[in-house]
Figure (cartoon, rainbow, N blue to C red):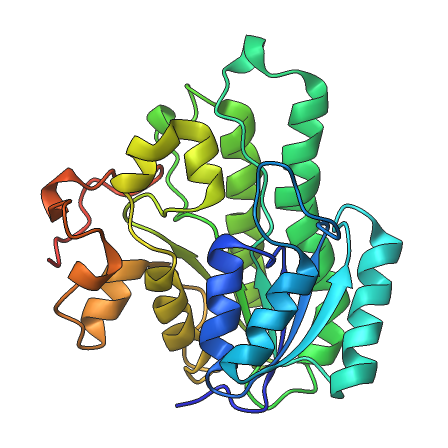
Length: 281
């Protein structure tokens, strides 16, 4: 299965997991719109929409860099319209953009609360709302949201309730859309990592040590590729964990996704991962 000639609209894909998913699709020959805020280099974070587009082209895909704040309805509407004008439609929406602040109630100022909920829950809903009319016209349409399985245990809320609310808001979009658009053949699925993923966000939260004990973004990209090449009418409403999905599709060696000096047993578990998740390594 391939994403050749498919058009992907990816929010926040200028770096990290979003860019890894884009590059994996680009190797198939996909057409990719990167909708992200970073127009100029960030002092602490590598990558802009322009460097992402350049990497996509080098990997074999077509690229459309779109400077877009997904909190702004006008900007999202225009970005989706520009994607359709350039590539003729949209086959896949990847809701990757997300904001994080692992703070308790009294330490979370409302500016940060609003940022997380506007980007995570609202931004995901908005991108879906604007892309779905075009997905309805696609042959095998998919919405993939990078959000966790819905698990209402208090331990996932007590330490950082504002972030959890915002992140689960993304998952609720998957839950609702899978059923709402089932008759139209639009798949809606979520993907979440078992372990931390070595991105700039992880480094900012926990420094080099946390990044060292994380897997590479490529594990999420490979898992996303499996999801996006499934039949949209039969694979929808799933909350997938990266290595479990890969294991189900024949992968047995996960060592390429971690540093050689870090054994599997030392990898850092991610938030929201179910306690009863089967071991695969």
